[in-house]
Length: 264
Image (tube, rainbow, N blue to C red):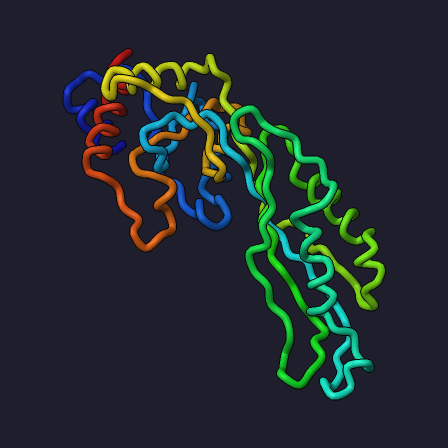
């Protein structure tokens, strides 16, 4: 992006006003994109760099993350009947967090929402009935879903279940510490059509698609800015030991951004 912007300025062919935003914290709390969205940027559209294999991501899922805890009563493991085993309680309800009758609306591009239990921890010693156990839940949101409402519905279903009632301890849902919005861009948005023309000019064809992950674009789109996610590399290699980007795609992406900035 920076190479394209530099070349467009040097050549005197830059045909639009450009704001370059280098955002931080995308993998954790989206602090950068939240700040950018709060500033209400006066722009007609935004392109967010992510590994999309040079496809135009016009919609992506959001993410909600929170913890669920079971609380029991500690006792010596030689007399387990005197305690309430929090791990056993969690084993009874963990499956309900990702399965069951929760309505799962389908999105035409993104499909259905997903839920994944990503962490679990419990117990304090080998000879102690555990009085605490917690899991971390990752719930992917589709456009139109309200994260807080989804969380409340899941809490009520799990806590009201027969499995939770049979557990002698308590089941506690912590409020979400992160609710990052999904993103969906109108098909006629200026930035989408302009980027699509640039991709067609450089690559030969342009493909619109969706992504199952969340990006910084969600918060900025929520502020009213049409957004497209685009860039070299494949998301299937992200967060892996072999993560890499083909130089050919980097060069093509640079040419695409230059075409976007200079095509008028």
